[in-house]
Image 1 (cartoon, rainbow, N blue to C red):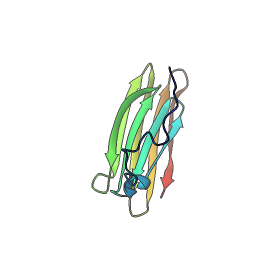
Image 2: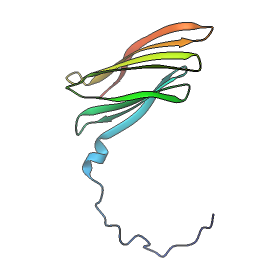
Image 3: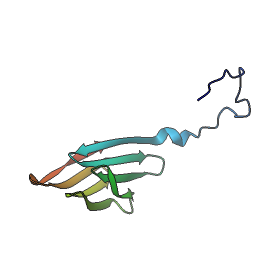
Image 4: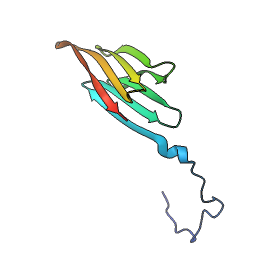
Length: 119
């Protein structure tokens, strides 16, 4: 890969102020339990939460949570691991709760639940 010096304003054609304020209204993070990983983004400008669920690194599903559809359940299995994730948003309380069941070969199944985050 070649790297060369650029003139002082190599991006003069890109105008300032191109970022919309709503870009600062989105907060993303992830949460893991064993082989299960949940990626989520809260967008306060809409409001909605988008989620993706992975088992052993493989995406098993995703969805969107909003005041009209406050709950999503995603389940699947990969390489002997099974999982079901239910996420429920209470937009009046400003919190997202989770219920996760994970089944792992030899160890069996475990249930987890709680408040994932509040805003």
